[in-house]
Length: 321
Ligand SMILES: Cc1cc2nc3c(=O)[nH]c(=O)nc-3n(C[C@H](O)[C@H](O)[C@H](O)COP(=O)(O)OP(=O)(O)OC[C@H]3O[C@@H](n4cnc5c(N)ncnc54)[C@H](O)[C@@H]3O)c2cc1C
Image (cartoon, rainbow, N blue to C red; front, side, top):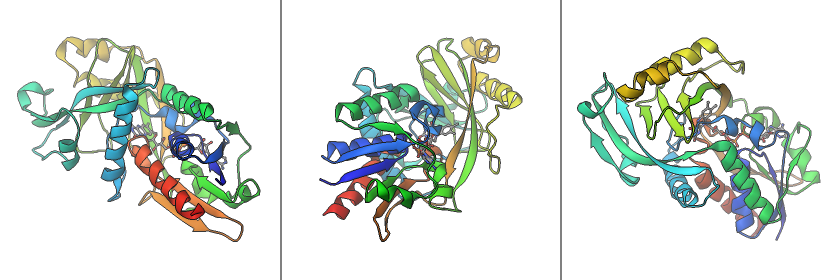
């Protein structure tokens, strides 16, 4: 089978590479940042369609939910199925997809934090990203696939000297590489504290520019977050971090409120969600080769990773016949 080059070692590149390797392709992954230094490593991360607008999102997300559930049974994958609650301060209906995931149940105001009038419980994969990206890299290595650090690529077509089929999973880097002027970075910030005893995720609903969400990751907890348009700076904002911690303290069980409110901030994570009006998942032909694009996943790159990766692999299979 043809040799393929995958550009990008974030969740999109590694997942697409694994989907291709499992289908029997030989390939390499190249990137100017390795897995722990990617945007993907910044994410909280919890499964859930978020900061993305595209009619294909739910299908990709549900396919990923099922794959991540399988991984949650593999020790060392970094994936765990967590129960938790999404809650709203106004009367709203739950999104349609909650009926398709495990453990769905409506929750009344008596079982919600103060100020919330309705909510729903379900189970979602929580992903410890550095562990998960390492796990994907290890699975690739087991299949003979290398993940190589290279200098930044200026134009995606430059890579045709290495392979006539390039799968572009460069995230926000695609803005210059492709180029794609519709792509922009939506700034997000998270706070990491020691886990005072939280076992469930929490997320407010619907999406807003000051979201409140909590993802327990074993001995630490990720508190979120921010959604900031037109700001691609990566310096941590301490004031925003303190606001996040205060908002999250307001939604944890009362016995843990002061532990969260006074918790030492262990780390502040900042990243840029690679957003565009629609995820770009298509093949484009050039004189010297074909590029299969898989980028622009906004705030749902982990959530949609397997659905998108398997569709990108399908495009490659069509190209090679
Ligand atoms: C604060 C925050 C929280 C988030 N939380 C969640 C969450 O809970 N759930 C969820 O589903 N999603 C979440 N997201 C979104 C998710 O992180 C992204 O959608 C996802 O990481 C994008 O992955 P990617 O592989 O496409 O891009 P990246 O992770 O950015 O990887 C891009 C790769 O391409 C390479 N590359 C780029 N340009 C070049 C170039 N010119 N030359 C060579 N290599 C290049 C890079 O080196 C890198 O290896 C969050 C994002 C942020 C910022």
